[in-house]
Amino acid sequence: MTTAAATDVVMRAVGITKVYGGTHALKGVDFEVRRGMVTVLFGENGAGKSTLMKILSGVETPTSGRLELDGEPVTLRNTVDASNRGIAIIHQELSLAPNLSVRDNIFMGRETTKGGLLVDYKSENAETSRLLEHLEEELSPKTLVADLRLGQQQVVEIARALAGNARVLIMDEPTSALSGSEVEVLFRVIRELTAAGVAIVYISHHLEEALEIADRAVVFRDGALVAEADAADIDIEWIISNMVGRSAEGLAPDLLDEFGEPALELRDITIADPSNPSRLSVDRLSLTVRAGEIVCLYGLMGAGRTELLEALAGRLPIQSGTVTVKGTPIAKQSIAERIQLGLALVPEDRQRDGLVQTMSVGENMSLASLLSYVKRMLLSGKAERTAVDGGVKDVRVKTSSPSASITSLSGGNQQKVVIGKVLLTDPQVLLLDEPSRGIDVGAKAEIFGLMAREARRGLAVLFATSEVGEALTTANRVVVMSKGRIVREIDPRTSNREELMVASGEAVHEADAGHETEGGQR
Image (tube, rainbow, N blue to C red; front, top):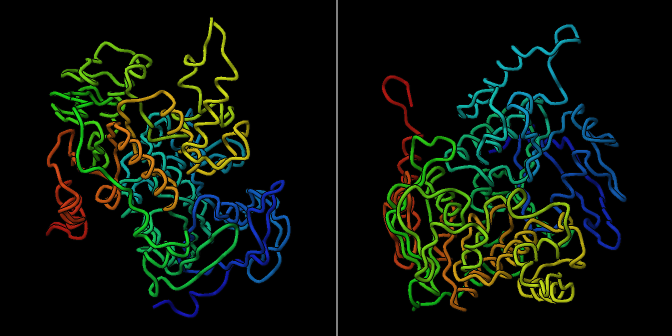
């Protein structure tokens, strides 16, 4: 039960509107941030959640309306001003400097000094180690961020926010790249912060996960706050119906029951860990995916899913074993040649690996298939524009124009552009790594609907996910991986969440995490 003192409003937005050109991102929003509580914001991409959070943290200024802090009107000039007032934000898209160390990223802009002159690296190292230990992440403060996997970078981003001792902490998709165990640690830290009186605002597209940590839920749709309630009084169906205006039952894709000939065949595949070549990321794995079939790779972080998909696409070398696409071996093929054979990957990190941020929507979409529009050694602009226009309509990208900047799109629409780019290469086998990462439930339904549609057209689809619900509702077959090997194959029609989690080792891990041995060690 939340005490009366814990419900004090520390920050309030009153009648906030935000207009970008002809787009009304926020429409007269009233919103409260309460001390000692976790307020979770739900809503589709483009609903206005992140825009409001940027205003609360000083990144943006409202077109109209006002902010109040401790009951007094306040104008946040910038993020430094907000930080000085105790307001911090963890952005959905990581804002780390990859060429700097973990320590330097955490203390960037607020360095600890000796006498106001020299940076006190010893003190910063000690504080960085303390923060990482608290987050149960074994990293050296001196490690370059560029050498970290995505989940570890997310932990560093969280540590940076915690280092500021904020009293209002905004988290925009903080778990999008975290493993199940890392999410548990973050939730423990969140509860410690709220117990100390910190107000948490939490945005997530992982509905069940977010509901677990929420004290109060708020739903945004089309720039307006449309529903709010105590977390104890609502369920997933309430969230989805308020977000998208329809029930969850209508969001599952329509899958085929019968499949064609083998399109992708893997035999005894072995792949070295790119960060530690002495160990294996994938160990003698064999798998067949047929035309029209959707196969899900499920497993904990470090199971080898990403390494497998990236090796198939040509980004990582395959140490041993054979891979064929429609009977053609790909071992000696370059990435471009594999694309020509019909093998294409939608990568896990769309910002870093899937899109060029300085290009337009159309330029990004046509990038992998440019050679198709070359005639007599010249690029046919007309052919390219026709293909792009068709691609935008095909995957239903919501954009003002193909010439619009890719950065103007929501996360879900950016993901559609990456998928559209891949589809323009006319693939036979579609690989997707965490295709729903950082997008809302409505956009997820569209993405998985696209996958199902392409499967019905005869493509073989192999995708990786860390979400149990996705694995059980969007695939014909679930392949569970652990430590680089397939440990079980599951028919989602006859299986449940517990069975899948036990197979991956997740349920065992969760059970062990809550108990200590006699010696006090976990």
